[in-house]
Length: 241
Image 1 (cartoon, rainbow, N blue to C red):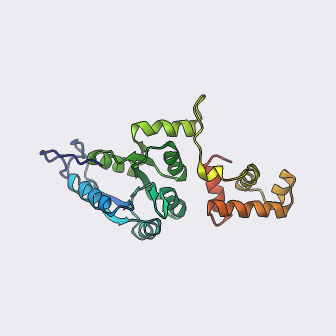
Image 2 (cartoon, rainbow, N blue to C red):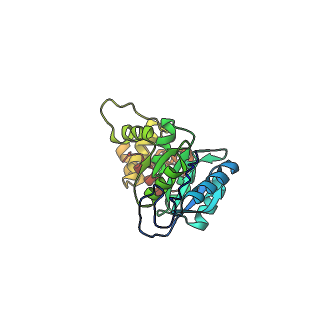
Image 3 (cartoon, one colour):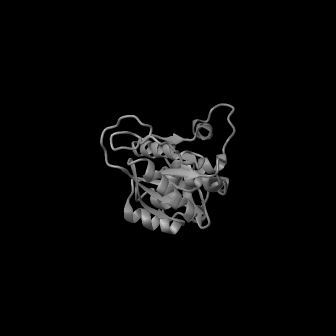
C-alpha cells in the first residue's frame, strides 16, 4: 500500500479523502487482519493520518485472534488478508458471517490470483483490493463498502464477473473447497440445502439412509462446518442449490 504525500490538507472534517465536500458523519470503524505486524502498524498510521473518515478499532495477526477480536469489537468493516499461516480470509469469513451479518469484509492482499479472489468473495467478502492501492483509495474503498457498495481493483472485477455471471466463453474459476467434494457428495449436499430429509435424499438418489449420513459426515469434515444450516448456506453461496 503506497502512501499519498500531499502538502495540502484535504482530510478536514468537512471533506472526503478525495477533497470533495461531504456531510458530517461518524468515522467508519475498521478492524485490520494481517499476519505481518509491521504492515498493520503502517496501515493504521496511514489510514488515520490522511482522513478522519475511518478509525481503526482493532487488529489481529491470525485467524483465531481475528475471530475473537471482531466478535468482541463488532467493527463496521474488516480489512482482511487472504493468506495467513493458520488459515486465510475465507476461514475468518466462514466462522463469522452467520453470527455477524452486519460486519462488512474487504479483502486486502498482495495476491491478484483469480482463485484467491473468487474463494474469498464466495465466502462473503464485499470486495477485494490489492496492497498496491494508495492510502486515499483504500479509505474510499472502506467507506464505499460500509455504505453497501462492492469494490474491486480494476483487474480483479473481471474474475468476479466471469465466475458469477457465467458469461459465454468465460473460463471457469476453480473453487478448492468445492472441488474436494465428490460428485455424489455434491448431489447429497444440493438436496440437503433444498430442505430434503435424509430419507427423501436416499429415495431421490437410490441409496440408503446410512449412505446419505456417510456422505453428509464427509462433507461436514471436508468443509469444516458443523451443522445442516451452515452446509445449506455454504451450498447456496456456491450456487449449488
